[in-house]
Length: 427
Ligand SMILES: [Zn+2]
Image (tube, rainbow, N blue to C red):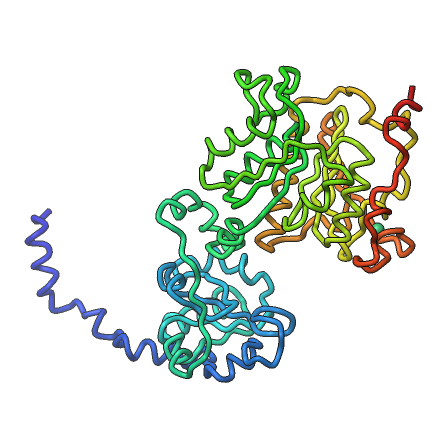
C-alpha cells in the first residue's frame, strides 16, 4: 500500500480518471431544474387559495382551503410566519410531514424565505412521498411581506421553557404554538384525589399555565395508596395545599388557584367561570348533575372519569358538540348501586391509568390535535386488560342540552334528590 498522501497525489494526476464534478450542474442550474419539476404559486394566488385574503372567516388549513407549510428552521419560523402555517423544517420533512398533513391528496403550499428550499421540499413530497397537490410559494415569505400581506409574529418561549418543553416542541402536533396554548390554558380540577393526583402532576409537567383545584378534604394516610400527589409527611394538611406543593416542585411556573371548598349550587358558577376545561373526578352523582348543568350553561367542556374496583370509564362532555352527562344518564342509578355512598375498594393504580387518560384528552383539547373522546365512552377493565368503546349520542329530548344555554336557570341546575336522603335510602 502506498502512503495515503502518495495515493492521493496519484489519484489526482491519474489521466484516466474523469472529474465527476465537471458533469454536475452549478447550484443555480440545479435549482432551475428542480423548479421545472414543481409547481410554483404567486403570493396573491396562495393568499386566495389559503383563505387569507379575508374572503372567509376561516384561517389557512381549514375546510377546502390549501394548507400552508413553512419549511424554514425553527428560529426563522419563530421570528415571523404566515398566519395558520404549520411548521415542518425541511431537515425533518420526511419524518414530520405526515403529522402536519396526513392526507396526501390535500392541496399544500410550501414556503421558505425566498422559494428555493420550498421548491426542494415540494419536489421531495411529490416525487418521494406521493403527495399529489403540492406547490411552492414564489419568492417565499420575503415576497409575501413585500406585497404587504400579513405575517404573524409569535410570542417566543424563554430559554428555560424551550429546554423544559423541548420534547413537546419536537412534536408537530404540539410544537411552539401548542406549547403556548398550554401555557395560556386554564384547567380546573375537581378533586385532588385519586384521579386528580396524576392529572394535576402531568398537566403541571406539560406546562398548563393555570391549574385550579377544588377540594375541601385533608390528606389521610388511607389516600396514599393511590393519591400520588400527596406524601406521608403531609398527612393532615389540606389537600389543596399538599397538591400545590407537589405541583410547584415539578413546575414552579404553574399558577395554582386553590379552592378549599366543596362544589355546590351556591359556589359552582363563581368557581368554574373562566376556565377553559374542567377535569371531573368527583365521586358523587349530585355534584355530577350540578356540574353538567352549569358547564352546559357556560359551554365549558368536561373531561370526566370515574372508577370503581378494577373498572374505569372516561368521556368528554363537550356542550352542544356531543352528549352531556344527562343525555347519557337521564336519571341517577338506584341509591343502592351508587358507588359514592360510603367507601369502596379501588385498585391503587386504576385512578393513575384513568387520570392520565383524562390528562391526555385535556392536552388534546388545548392544542387541538387528534380525535377527542367526544360522543364516545371508553371503558377500561383492568383485570381483563381490555378497553371497550361505546358510541354515545346527544338526546334531542335532553332536559338540559336540548335548550339554549341562556335559558338554563340557576334554580333548576343540579336538580337531584337530596343526597343524604338518597344515600340513607341505600341503607
Ligand atoms: Zn344533554
